[in-house]
Amino acid sequence: MIEFSSVTKRFPDGTVAVDALDLTLATGELTVLVGPSGCGKTTSLRMINRLDEASAGTIAIDGVDIRQHPVTELRRGIGYVMQHSGLFPHRTIGDNIATVPRLLGWDKKRVAARVDELIETVGLERDMAKRYPHQLSGGQQQRVGVARALAADPPIMLMDEPFAAVDPIVRKRLQDEFLALQARLGKTIVFVTHDIDEAIRLGDRIAVFGEGGRLAQFATPNELLAAPKSDFVVDFLGAEPQLKRLSLLPVSAAATIEAPLIATGATAAEATSAADTAATDWVLVVDGERRILGWHRVADYAADTARAPESFDAVVGAGDTLRAALGALVISPLGVVARVDADGRFGGLLAQSSLHRALS
Amino acid sequence: MTRVALFVALWWLAAGSAYALGLESDGANTVAQVWHWFVDPMHWQGPDGLPHRIGQHIYYVAVSTAIAAAIALPVGIGLGHYGRGGLLAINIANIGRAIPSFGLIILMFLLVGFGVVPVLVALVALAIPPMVTNSYVGMQSVDPAVRQSAAALGLTRWQRLWQVELPIALPLIMAGVRTSAVQVMSTATLAAYVGLGGLGRYLIDGLAQQQLAQVVGGAIVVAILAVCTEIGLAGVQKLVQSPGLAR
Image (tube, rainbow over all chains, first blue to last red; front, side, top):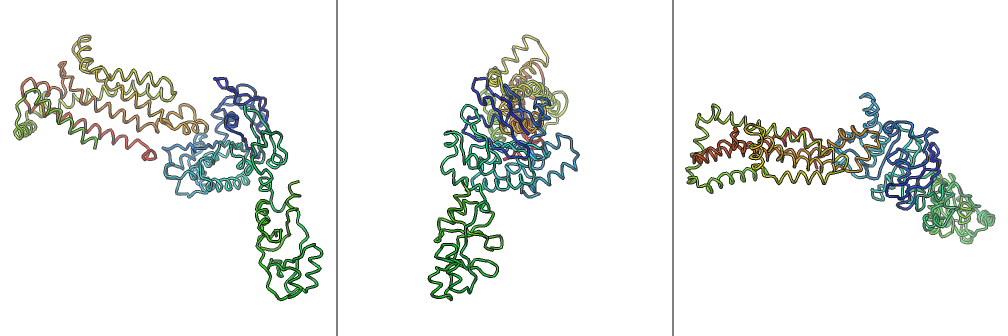
């Protein structure tokens, strides 16, 4: 747990970067500090490992004031990743990763084993350990930066716009991998970004900073989008907050509607009855394994039960987001989306009303 | 490429000044004279012989470059590390660059008399500016992100200096040392003006005795030594510099 109590940072030229900040960051959570440039988010981050010193107030980690230990000791216990990897150009990738373990006096064998492990953890090839930073791409350098920060297995990680300098495709992949890594490691992470979409994607909780270093709102991404506290937050969240909320919610979170389902070879009467129950004029055909084969208008099916079904493409997986479901919904001729499991078996039908209820 | 240019320039300078001073020379004959000067066993022994003169010359260069490095590198590196006072130091160093070495030698000679001190003072003064400037610039050129990450990882100031900043600044620091050493190598010929030895003797005695072969021969040896210094220091640099910095 990282606690800011009335923390203020005033620079020598008089600018107040952070103004009486009270904020408690929970252990094992990924907290994103987000806001426009000059809002004090980076300064707040840097005060945690004392790259910047607070002018007033205290910061405590698990109840202990960070000024109680020598600063180098504090920093060796906190991972730090920055926008430009900050890798040491004169050291190999392996030696870069080994920096903190060596400072802590680990023996050679343990260091080497840890380096090997981390290179794989961050998705690099083991033979990269012998290379130098300039031989790597920007994305690979960021991975090494993350590995170096993780090296001594610190409980806390500070990340200052770590993915801002890589191209959007690489960024998306790094974000995904990072989320998977965090799900496994459960570190206490403080993550600074100016990109609200990144904040929403990654954060367990988001602290929105306003001008002048004041905290505008501190909430989970869903709460933030559902109930922004001020016009500033609304502005900062940007267009389509409801769409952003949809992208946070899994398909499994939405209630399904009654589905007019029939098996192959069903009679015209069975089809009519299924459609009546669901109040539709069409039916969905599934096979014995409940895999979707297609759909019929009831009237057409009643006229000719042997006709081939129309194809039905509006399907989403249970792990997809509701935003993906909405995307499928708008191009579905029937105005519905089918949820299927990993084996393609039918799991329920979503309509616009399902999304509406999930958001309210 | 630079080394070849340096060699040609020194050759041209030596030959050119010989003409300017009115020494006799007629093309092919000069080459033969110089050749004879070099192969004459008399010139390879005794206190006036090449080995002894070369030894003296290298001694002046080594001592003055070492003293200059001991003064200039800590100043340039320290200022670069703290990022303060750099402009002042560079400007003072550049004023030093403007002092004519010859004038300084004569001045020091008048002040302290015969001996090696006037020469060393002048050579040290000549060697300091490039080393201060280059080591300061080298330290300043370390990427701020790298400095910052070194601090954030928990390296002490001393560890940051020795393990991160100095190794990264090394190529520029070494460039300063090389520049200084080569300059000192050619300027150390001035030692002969105040009665000391070194390769300058051949230039001065040769001019006084109207012996072109001696002047050119001495100049060639100085040029070769300068080139060897450059190549030797470049070799040392290659050994100590991280391959990660070679781009």
